Image (cartoon, rainbow, N blue to C red; front, top):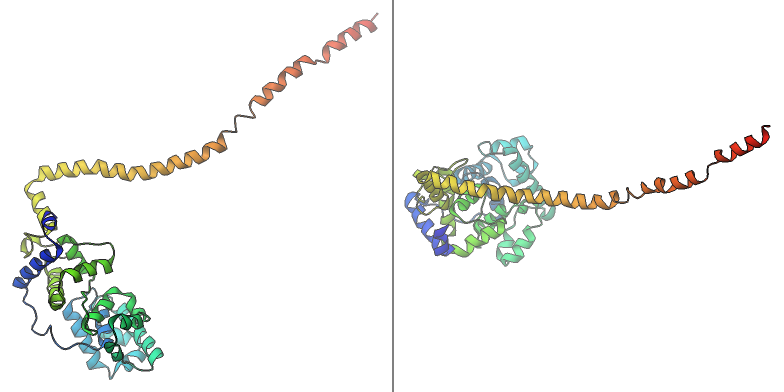
Length: 305
């Protein structure tokens, strides 16, 4: 993180790009022709949280095993799912792809969205966001990059994990993507994404990354922190011990405030309760002052002769 403090994000990511390029050689076919808009949607659904190779193979199988996209639209989910057998959650992806094709056919009575490539990007996206598939920011960014000629860097859970370990994060995915797109020029966006995906699926894996084998270990915030903890266990433990009470106190304050509020709410209702208690004590004196028994003894003494 100290490195990020002295560098701009653009400088830092340029350094990341250069070091990853030395380790992972960019594929020669990465600058191949654009996909059609429809193909880019299917490719985005296949690629999210999967490897590039898995997505490429799935898209090829769709073209080889089905006559056209209309056949995919009318096929049972089980058949579409078979095309995605090597990818995580094949059923969910098959349902999303078929749902998109059915929605597209119901709107256009066809399977071409190519007229959108001639429109300004904002207008094209306005049309595309009517389709449920574009609720995924990853699919949206994939279509912008692969079909509409815009600058976009799709981010899924694997690439986001790698970025967060490098020290680049944002709670909002579109905001995180815009950070990258401002820092990485358009002419390097596709290659940067490819290299980042290689990193995410090679060394920067879950649950724990293989930092000693990572090319970025000297500039990665996560790797530097782990290295410091390994070399200075006493200081790391002290820092953790100091941080623990503060964290616990911060967490304890919230419920304590809630309890105080509940007690304060209960007090007005319990305060009037003691008021009825003095009432019976105030009525006791009159009962003592008007005793009927003392009047009966004089009557008895007068009648008894």
